[in-house]
Length: 506
View 1 (cartoon, rainbow, N blue to C red):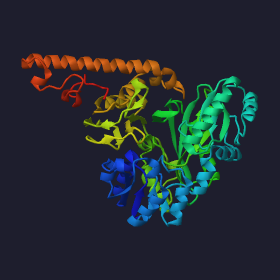
View 2 (view 1 turned 90 degrees about the vertical axis):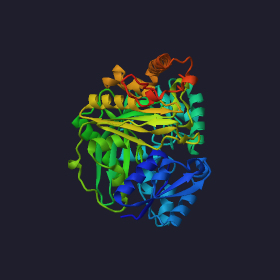
View 3 (view 1 turned 180 degrees about the vertical axis):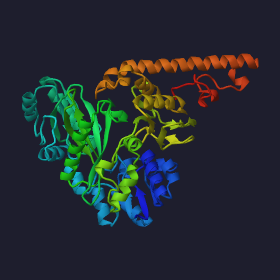
View 4 (view 1 turned 135 degrees about the vertical axis):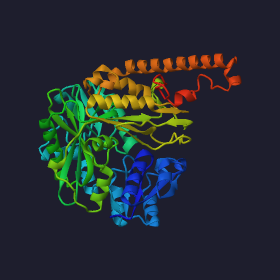
């Protein structure tokens, strides 16, 4: 087993890895930019090393600096987390050149599956059904037009090196293609340094369902069931759950076998995710492979009882998987929501700043994976995700009810969060019935935002009523002379959530 692991990431995933290392008796070494000097992952790791200025291109994206630190710290393994360099084969090759184990797939497997067109070609050879479209890069706008007319509009332009919805454009008609082509290529070039595009037929109201896989170096690959990820805003996942509300044993077996078949053909090891679109008739189509740990991995952990980060480490150390496919069982239901420092009512602008107070939810079936604390300053330099709140229940209804309750307990002041929107989603009748698809949230967003704003207005009115009552009983005329917080500042009574009527917004 490894002696010391370099955690080449930040935020909640770096905290997650550091905790796994601590439980396994492995020393952990963190890296931090100038903006992250006081970050939680720095505090929880055994060692921490500065890696450069705040911009990620000068710090977390510097392979040379990571290798220097790994050698200096005496690390024999590196965990990339997700994001940043997690799917960069150059990092895996640099680790190999420096005799450092990379906790992830081989660079060759990354290249076979990381490119969207290469992965589609591999899926075709493996007999995995795909959304109709191109398997090769489209070279010109005229070529794109000919293909799109052959498939029939609407179609999707997608970046070959894409992910997270970047470099993706819906094209409803032929007249929309030139602008979509220009915008998709520009966004792909800026995001990935690669402007190449391919094209797929657009499916009406599909569900986004992904299969978790894990493989060892001894030829064993298994799947760990599915995650439903259809609640998305602009192709970014917001709420994930396992199992999917539409899943049947037959469909799970078919999707799992297809995912394992594709991973086997790529010579895949370690953890990864094979993503599919599923139509109303339960036909599934290969979408892409994420050659890393996913943000939403906790829902799989909650229903399988497995620790995916520890499995990653053990597999990278050369150990065989300690179970076979027939040993994998799913128990209960888990739902995860992503907590962001952002203001949905203000076009989802990030909300950086110092966290003045914070109440973390707890109770039966609740898990909070985050990377912040009271007094921490949320930077403008990085993704504004604070963490993930996960709930487990005996069934879907209980898991949702527990997550709803936990969001009500969660309180942060000093910054805005998306808690109101998450609560609105969880209470929506269509979501409760499982009637969701990839554009569901985009379509429902205006009404959901109104519901969230109404809750915030109710909270402000509640603050004013509490203040008026306190002023009456203290016999004073204003909040300052009574030593009471003004209404616009959430009161301590509210922050401590003593009663059911507390502010559920922040």
